[in-house]
Image (tube, rainbow, N blue to C red; front, top):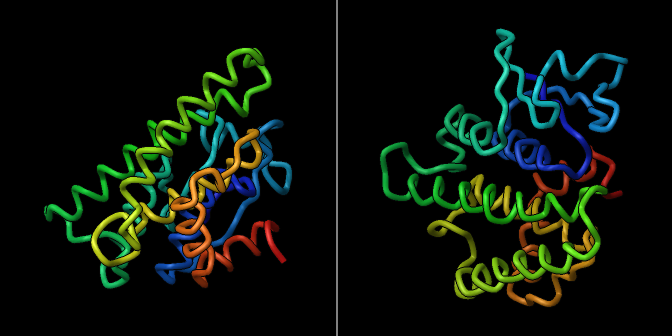
Length: 202
């Protein structure tokens, strides 16, 4: 398999999942501004949407959208425990969290990363994101993981997006529960390996 990624972007989530699952894969670094990937290829020919992640399977099939990709990875290796059994309530909870993270947290960062966003709107965007963090803190206060007693792909995705706070003028330390949770997930060997492979840590 081949994962098209951009360092530190949401593609870090399936990158972590691939390592957690023990699935062999190659990494292809994408410049999301120029829409080219290492070697000079046209990324738009790979994904006309123009953004990462893209997981290319051995038969050439390409999957896009991080939440779908990480569930595919989990289902390829059911013994990994990266997602509960399909059809179970626990699996629905993982899907619920993936949808919340992608729609309410991930997308709330978008205006803060965009150069086209008016400066007077950014405090509004930060306030909205902060409200999501307030609620999330109540959910993680007495939990080690998002669903049950095991790490799942939802935890990996949340870890990635929470890591963006320093880049948008916010401090995760303002939410001690989230900061502690993020630091704990960061110590997982698969997370450490993915960060190193993307040049985000030594």
